[in-house]
Length: 274
Image 1 (cartoon, rainbow, N blue to C red):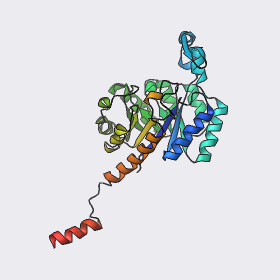
Image 2 (cartoon, helix red, strand yellow):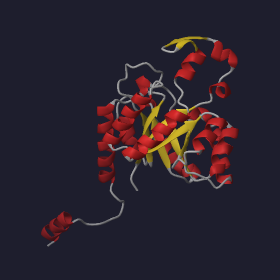
Image 3 (spheres, one colour):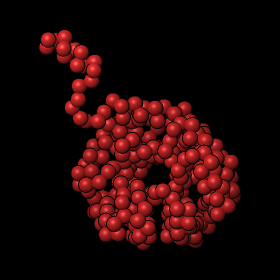
Image 4 (spheres, one colour):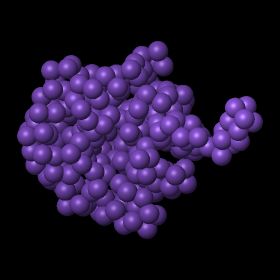
C-alpha cells in the first residue's frame, strides 16, 4: 500500500482563494494524494479577551482581525471543493471546534484530521468519531494517557483511524524527530501510524517512511518568507517535488518484505552455485 502524501495548506493561503488554488496546483504537480486546510469558528476557539488583544497583521491591529482574515467560509470552501474535483485531488480540513466539524461534514470528505492541539478536546473527538470516516490523529505534544483516551473514543465509535507521529515545534530541529516512536505507536495501539512534520528540508520525512509511516503530511508554501506563523515550517514547491520523488523511491527500495529471487539474482545463483 502506497504512502499517503498530504500537502498541508493549512492557513498558508493567507485568506486568499487565489493563493489556495496555486497551492493546490503545487500539490497536484508534485503528485500528492491530498491537500488539507484548517477550519475554525473564531469565537468558539478563542476567548474575547484574546481576540481583543493587539496583533499587527495585514488585516488590522487585533488578534480577531488576524484570525478572521485567515478564515475561509462557505463560498471559499465551495470553490475549493470544486477546484480539487477539477484537478483530481482529494481534500480535507482539520476542524478546531465542533461547529467547524459540522460545517466540513457537509462536503463528504474522504478523511478527517485531528490536529495535535485538538487531541484533548473530547467533545470534538466524539463529534468526529461519530461520523465513522477514516481519521488521521496527530499526537504532537501529547502524553501516552492523552493518546490512550483519544484512541478509546475512536474505537468505541468503531471509527477507523491512523495515528500521526508529530513533534509540535515550528520548525522542528531534526534531532527532535524521534522517529522510533512510529513503530512504538504501532505496537502500543495496533494501528497504522503516519508522520506529520514541521521540520525544514525533506530528510526526516523520507526517513519516516523507512520507519514505517503509512502517511506523510507536510505544510506547503509558495515562499517561506511570506506572512504567516506556519510558513517557516513549510516546504516550497521544489522541495515538495523532491519529497514525493524520494518517498516513492523509498517505497521501491523497501520492497515487499517477501523473500523472492529476481531474474538477475537467479542468473548469479546459477553462475556461482552452478
